[in-house]
Image (cartoon, rainbow, N blue to C red; front, side, top):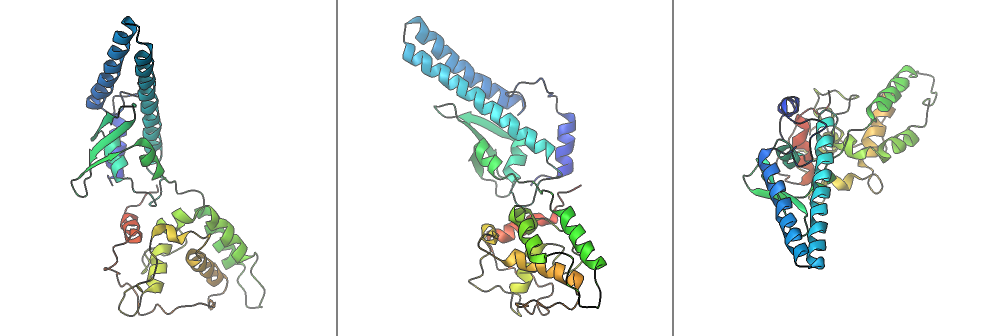
Length: 290
């Protein structure tokens, strides 16, 4: 993933503006390829029209429209990229998108005018070919869950007392509603309610993993670390750590019914796991928020 400061400097200095054509915003080399593809089918259309081959002419015209549509979609993708550099979530893998938006990739088109970006993956030196749709599918915003969570925790701290009164709101109900649409970011982005200097570095995912390792810092073989496995529709691990945090804000002595011993895990690193969750954790070292 490219450095955000580098990308911001790139966007500050690009020679493109709001009046630029979609074919121009990916660099001069890409523009030549796009224009060349349009010209190719324009010549086919012209030649077919002259000899009365309406089917071929119509097909060439259709492909030209597809090319323009694909370029317009790529323009929207790049607009999303530039507007979200400081608000995108660590959930997505933006490595290839960053390279393409920095003009390090070149376009190609299939026989139907479908746009494919070809770029060298900086992580392994291999060539990656991908579509605008595939790039956009990785995109995910942090969302607005942080402020409600901070406020809820502060309300619980303020309501803390020794008289045995219940919390000022239903904690499970609040957590369920909060994580329902925000779980991807909550798993992958640093939460402002946790101390970033502790063993979990301020991330719920790392807390979950630290809670699950044995005394040697190794996860059980059947522990599912695929990032989609944390979906709260069928998994309660995120719910557990968030609700426990809030319960302890109200009652520092709170013990959950499934409290696990993680004192020996401490800051151990689960180095043997090569799953998608660790790839997610590796992106956490780069702060995405302003």
